[in-house]
Length: 629
Image (cartoon, rainbow, N blue to C red; front, side, top):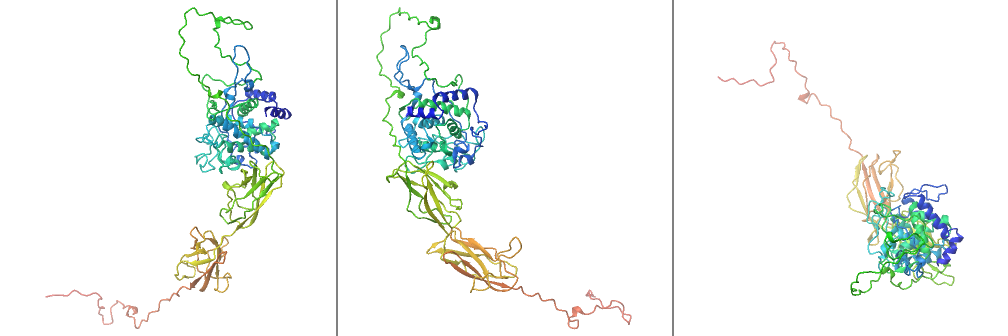
């Protein structure tokens, strides 16, 4: 594999020497931080955020799979991993391979399986598993040194810091905390450190357990491989390789570090038991520990291996080129030898585990559409999932095939998280099943197209239909007579919808005010549902039943003309109910009667208080006090 990979790198102008030179130049000239825009867009000049990360083209658009979250800066040792068994000098023991070259067994199996799967569906990408290993090393130290269970899932979630804009991208929560446990901001998740919004688009079920888990190394490795290949990249070409790495995290230092490990693993590696991998220490969001430095020179093809013999005292050393003096023989009697202790085995030097089984590279020749009928009512989940079966030229099922399901632009149906495209992997029976599809408000047929990314195979088409919700019976709740004077409001009208014996929620019901119970023709002057923006009465209205199958009309107003009218309510499916509305004219106001002065003493003329003709004054209207004595 390494030899084949080397030939391909030379064809793509990415030989070991060129990669090493690029690493050296980047390490010497760049520091941490985001990459500045370049003339050709090589460095990913798009703003980072959920919009770029969730694009169907993924990293091809210049977004960041990780939200530019922190990563490990440790570079591989200058001692290359392919010196096993080759002594470099009489004083140096045989090298068995540096510990840093070891990759945990399950993690390495996941990288190789992802390479085989992506090569089967997108051979033009030329994805090498060593690139996944380089990214996995930088992102999570190979899943925390291979601390995964037998299914490939980390024992505890691997989470990055909150992407709150302080030193990283500012990405508000997109998954309700489902993956990262944070309902305020997104966090990078899992051994390949996907942000939830990116995982929603690129997440895979590569181990066939029915879940797309970013904390599972098989799922995460395959998702990373497909993300790196987005946009038709050929990773055997240096420019595409750089773009792919930068799409993961837009930092020159990140590119430097990943390229270093990519080159290092390309020269050879070995497996170590899960949980015993070497853990990196220095991370990009904190300063290096005091007294430590990071190598900034490229990996040398043949650097001298460090001697295991302690250096001689400086006073006894001779100039370079002369043999060191032999140490003097001891003059003091030697102490008795201590009892021999059992040898301690270095876990990194244990014999490699059982060889990793890599699935054979197979090619899918055809996608066979599933036979399930895709039907749903508006605003509900489809009863059956869209599925296809990947088969080879002989008709046998092909496992591990990436299949992309896409919805047309005319429908408002959506996959989870509002996605219009999803990519899944075929299982052991060759079946690729899309996640649950939910219908929108539109009732119409549409077609789901399934394709294999990177291949020119004919699309498999699956017919889907969204039907309106129906009710075969409507009934008014209550029987109070509905009467109102002109211009006054009616009491609320409540109606219940049923389909068979069940309540019918979400049913659209059309309400029309008519002049009679014989024909549902809109009235010209009956009651109305208020007025529109132009001030005209509204006498037709569409309402929707609630979760209990009921609707309530509270805005009915009597018109200016008295009489009896009918409120017709009809639902798809045949449900109909008619409600009588009565408009009464207000009672006429009676003007006050004119009083008759001859019969009403209160209207008699007022007596003139002036003296009468006889000269006597008028009698007082007040009672005089009674005299006594």
